[in-house]
Length: 382
Image (tube, rainbow, N blue to C red; front, side, top):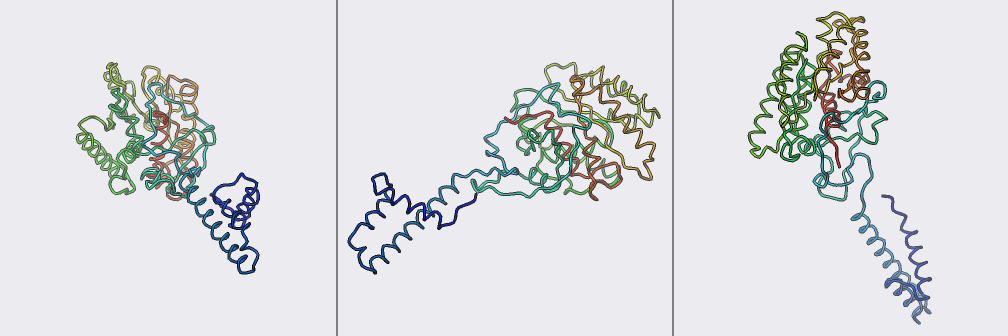
């Protein structure tokens, strides 16, 4: 907050003093008027004394003014919330969830932002998860600038908690290596820490190890929360794409989906492996569309953007882009029955050196940001 110079405040105070002599003054201004009208003002020394007294009283008023405003001020800086976390409620959005958009509407620019602490409370308005998001990197499309929320760990837990929402919510993530890393990013948020000391993941062996650690940490936390406050979030290997989605993956989803008492949310993706098995763009799109048309309560996650590299030929990069664009007419928002988490544009725009180690798999901060978009699809802060 910008405070006016003390001289300006003093001028206002003395202006009020002269005005208040007509009978509309505060107690402090009346003191000014009383002193000024006294007979002491007739000698030079008395006038000096009265002037010094007026300055001291004015400085006292300025100090009180600043103190009161500091206590009542609420920062509108974009990196602080306008109310403490415990005063905000979070609602789970059931199927078909919320649509963030798709395609070019989600183009965004990666950035970091400085973090400003609030003077209104001893508690920071941003938790570990939110602070790290701003420090590591965020990518907010202009179309979502006023609606996208960066969830704290507490808010994410409340949204997905069966007890808090009074409904049996179960998240099941499955698919390829990109889905493993999305799962790890979501676990980082829910546990409010970067598991495995936040080490970057290089290669499939380490990815599997960290996924196992994440699953163990989640089960341990749920076992400690005997009242089911902590969310049920699991990763399963059934939808990798090496066999048609209509086989193992669809079978598992249909078996679980018959339980109408549970809010299952299946979060699936395996585009690149389907493409490599089909070796054709149209056949890949058709298999995914057939899968979506025969399932419900499934969020399909787009493939990432692939950078041309030794392991990714220009043809593969082009074909994966065509698979992505071919899916858009059959997923949300075009088809609200098929919820869609579009991460293509955000992975395409991440050009920093630490965005990816192999031009395909993204760094952990990028996957935590993907998880934030998933939370915005499933949750609403009220």
